[in-house]
Length: 151
Image 1: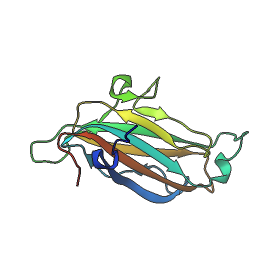
Image 2: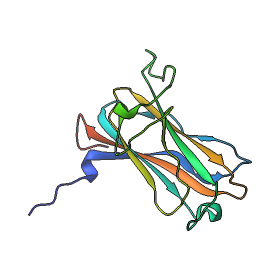
Image 3: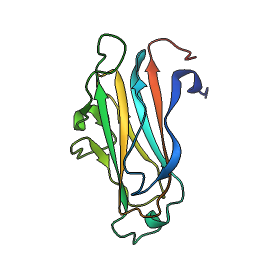
Image 4: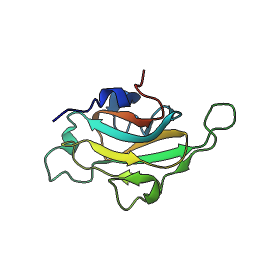
């Protein structure tokens, strides 16, 4: 069996550099991810060791992961952002007000596929009851390029 080269067909973007999130930092918002030239994306929110979100029971500590998307404003920048809906994401059910997940454990990354038709994407991570907090970051893997291999 021949292996397919995934590396030539995916362009990872560091949307939010790994940093500390807690009540003091408040919500962290990723940069704008430009999906021009790609037909899909995967959002990966990764966590470091967050004591308050460790092995259950975890209490009320959690991080809401919200996705928003925007059209091009005509000048190559995002127009007004809007919350994604169930139809815009795969691998997630029950999207409410753009929130795709509210993890209360740091044991696994949050992933979702984006299949909406907008050019720009961003994520907002909002902590609840994270006094100490810990590291979190966001990677967006842009996929299904119109022209491969990706640079």
